[in-house]
Image (cartoon, rainbow, N blue to C red):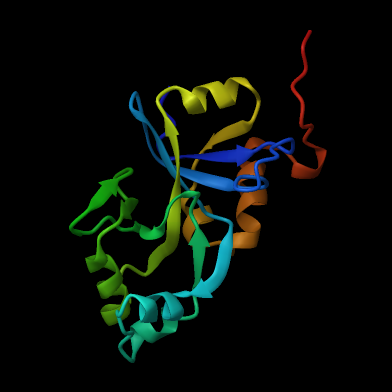
Length: 186
């Protein structure tokens, strides 16, 4: 099973405050473990504030229109480090190519490009990421902690954050309000 480029949807019984009601985009899943970012949990910070803290000033013009965008809580691992999920992949110093269109970049050059030229336009910035050691996510899936569904870039880049979880559920044909927290056994 390879869940790269999939969404994880937290089941209603998820009690962990980091992951309750979260939608996670899986950027990498292999025999070493899993790396993902929460894509529906903004923090009380926008790009202008973050960029000011890291001394990357917005230029006037096209890039200034992005200053109001929210920064997201990507997960509880390395919360002092920024990650940019974006499309197209581009040629940044440290990018994990998730697929032919989407990349996850952790190098400063992508932030400088956002501040200078407003590129890449389709992007979200997170602080931290969500990680699982080898076999850990598979164990959680077996415990009915998550639903999985192939990711849709439209959900990531075109929808407001508050619509992302429900839209991912719609791919499965499930209404979150009717989802039971416990697995059934025959």
